[in-house]
Length: 342
Image (tube, rainbow, N blue to C red; front, side, top):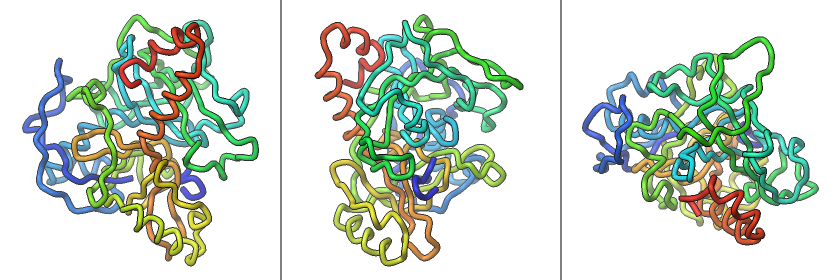
């Protein structure tokens, strides 16, 4: 996961939902924070769901339907509050592979008129909440990316520019021997997904990280043998002061994360282990609100275990800045897909 936590873990005050999460409710259900949960190591999703920690199980069920695969990494559905009820997701630029963008300047795609969609490698958990992803692919449409330095590579991208936004709709196909491509984005039917408490439709789908709390991080490691259905863990959110101090410790241990200064306006650190493939996966608080996406992690044996998470507040800021700079005609094309979060 290094270099880019290329392409995990669990939270502070998990939400105890007093009943099964097998059926999506029509309206968001009020949640009562459960008792404090101690940080745990990286675990298989199925091990947590089959375990005896009900608070952990409840929180994982709140958020896991929002995290899926995208190429060699992960992606996280942020919201379904747009005009079409589609899945507005976030992933890491290095997961997409920045060479795939037509240029390094910020841009968006007019999805109703331009088909940039794929099926290959794109999956989200089944609507019924099954643990295994199975053999069903879901249509994935990159929607927009922001400015990327001309000198940046997939391995040297800074957290400040290592994210993009996309859309998933209801088009699904079975995996086959040959590449398959979706039709133009389907705006006629809201996305069906495993979201038993409508986390992606809440008034506040996101929040800011609070130092000392435990965050739950979920993603899909490339190590499918040991983590066939994804990984999850809990780790403490570090203060800015501690994060800056850890940079020196990482540098002393010879970990490349020590060469990247900590940027408190862009990111936060979670004290946890990350694996390659989890980039783009979500970090959530105990209410199941999205705090940001994972982009990098330490991986040197004797280095402190940390995961760098790009704050959702930074992503929202870049989104608003880009949107406000568009002409009214261009705004009218983009706003139906991002409405509800801008």
